[in-house]
Length: 369
Ligand code: SF4
Image (cartoon, rainbow, N blue to C red; front, side, top):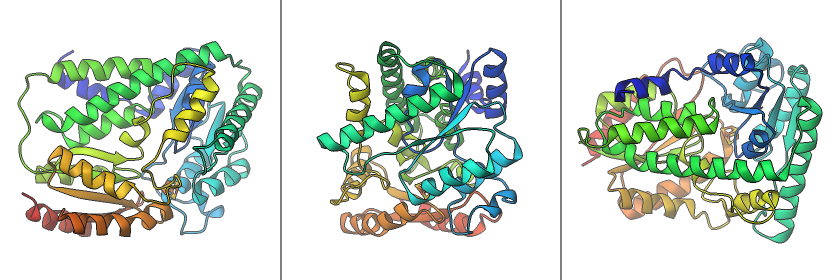
């Protein structure tokens, strides 16, 4: 395929169409909510994991279950569930890494009873023996619930194979994240589409398409102009991406939960595969929903801006996201001490007026080299 066709294929990975395609192929679909849902287990059981991160949509029915100050990712997942958007899925796995996700799981049981809720309970003290044992017990519960909901069977051999598939995908996504900002052909919108489509495609298919894209990009026109590092939970707002492209602001790297954060850590490919998954979770860090008393994320972001030669740091704050709000002050202070231009923009899935954010981005862009 030509470069344009490949980029268009990522943009065209519509979740509704992908769901219908996989169902027509006789596959069963399991919804995977943010963040760090153990997709490898779902994949190893011959099921199709499809990421659900909510949508830019009006909240109506879900208001019966949530107070207004819960983030719109959690609220819009329930809204779409109640509307029937996910009909045909066999289960939903929801981890418990923040208060909103805990509430999401409990509300889901009553709001969308037709799609069984499978909880994944993670430990926060994850890098010691007890933490790894706790995470492994959580995975065993997921396996048991998925077997009951789908009739599929788990095997450690199949999981070992899925770990390899996911590690290969992690590596290709890390490479894409490094390369994307170097080429003029990859707009902020295209970059987002590549990350977003990974939630709706089997990883083998997505890995092959990203490899094709990287090969097609070689030798094309290099990008120019200022660049930023982005950080936050979500960065798929069309209004935001359109504004970045209009300003010619490239993304040199990201620390976004729905983008690179999930691909930073591989599972070891030796030993018991469930222990390997627990080891992968134990090794994760630099994330607002994972306990880190030292808050190393701020130093990591300063290093990333310097290492990539980016001109500033753009924090995309999901409205009512407590974990990110706690980190914001620390990150802002670290940037001020390092002399790095910093901007925080609040985003909401219900945002109808992006005007104020646009003005802030224009002023920020004028401060960059
Ligand atoms: S956006 Fe924040 S509050 Fe909402 S689910 Fe994600 S981490 Fe939790």
